[in-house]
Amino acid sequence: MNTFVSFFLVEQSLRWKVYLFSAGVSFVYAIVNSFALRRPEETVTLETVSLLFALVTMFVLARILRAKVVAVESESHRPGIRFGWKLAVPAMAAIVFLAWVYVAGISMLQAALVESKLHSLTSFFDSVQASNVSEEDLRARYVKTERVINASLKQDIPVDSGILKNTQQAIHHSLGVARLSDGTKQLGEVTAIDLHSFSITREVREGKITPQYAETLNNSSEFRRQAHYVQGSYTGQTWLILAPGGQIGPARDLILDHVNIRGIVPVEALVVSGERPNVVVRSASFENVTQFLDQITWVDMTFEASRIRYTEGAPLRLRNVSFKNCDLSGLHTPPGWGPVSAELEHRIEQADGRPITFVFERAAN
Image (cartoon, rainbow, N blue to C red):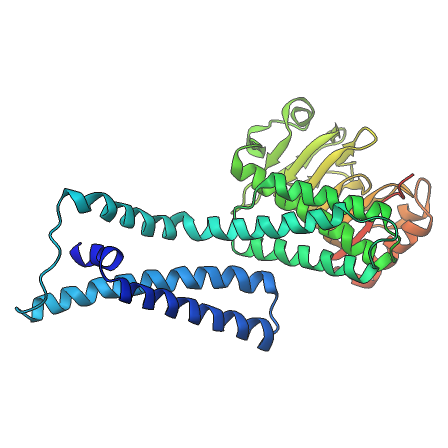
């Protein structure tokens, strides 16, 4: 304990050497990864923060262990600091600080960095007008936002859900006022979907959304009466078996997460209602069902042996969605068939069972 207290309160020269060395190593790490290896700036920044705190903590622990070894091997070692009540408070504060760094400090600092970046991007998207920004600049910001999301998800960074929603709304604003090519529009819409999905994950972690577990719902009618966020098993498989007439919905505000659905016959699985429903399905498989894709956000999904329908001109949001042995004939008949239906069919056939990402939103009036 004396050695621990000594590092923070007495040995100023050693302490600053540790800080400078750790900062130097972290700086070199950032430079090499950013410029030599061309890794994304957002990922490198978060890793550099973790490295900096890990190095400082490692040196403190090494200092303590070395002092213990010297104390055992030598009778003439330097006397330690007398540990009295005057040192108890700062010593405990130092211990709490290191524990905080290990448990929450790094993730909180990473979250602060991410949120600061998202604030900056949100301000940029909010300021976009029809002629005040180039498409290249806007596309670069969409890419940067996507990298921030991916890095945050990979490292499980506790980003505030409200900030994610604000950035999503700002992206929608930029898409509504700027004149963009189809490729840039797709990128912006996909980024908005990823922000939406990430915000759902964070709202559950923050306690803003209370999960209703699929195993506790006796039949599909209970989804209409009480469910908003229905969560299946993340480790196993949760399947809902739909009999004729057992469709889920009409739903206006519903999130299905890791809930797989199989029809005894190809019944319509999920039905939405209203002009702007908030219905999201994530990380699931639908088998032997009939499903209209429009007005639902599909993320990391698989449709297998199912009849696929689409209402031409309606909002379509597919993010990493696979179609295996599905009947696409419904895309040739009303309410389908048109340019969006044709493009959807083309992408599904070209993918040959691999995931596709395709978004269509109505043009703002």
